[in-house]
Image 1 (cartoon, rainbow, N blue to C red):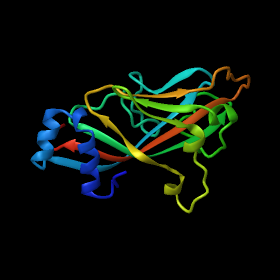
Image 2: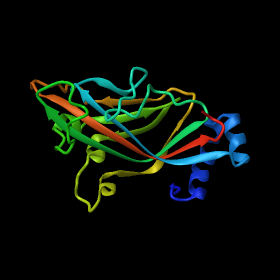
Image 3: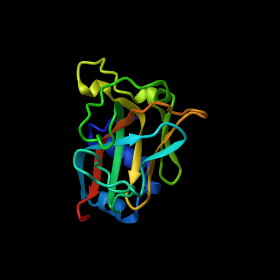
Image 4: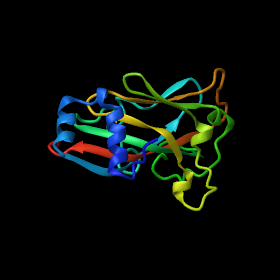
Length: 195
């Protein structure tokens, strides 16, 4: 994997994905007209146990403290390169607690056995939640991320989906509400001329 800590590493990831990039983006890259910014895209959401559920899709709205995603498509001229992911879990008896919980509880078995699937023009990654969960075993918050061997590249202008897939037959008989916090961290690369 290329390190996103260097210009060379970022260029390598973009070059590897060049067939997915627009002609305008590639021209801006050739002309040195790209901006690079650290990125932490966070989504906090109440989730029902069982079946398949969309975490990020066309109905996702940007809400301060709850979601940095605004629907499921970035504007053309923007690329998000994700090299670290983490999941936090919490529960509460009430609905609508996405923005006030701590997301430091252990995942119940149904969630540990679920998978996060990320697609954009095909599958980009499939990750067991048990590997993404915030284990709080390190010396810093950075230690709680899963470092991806191959970064996920989300290209502006094309729809993407983050989907939670539970094992067959899983259901919830409890009364508490379940909440997930997804953090996708990496670099945003944007054309300097893009709004």
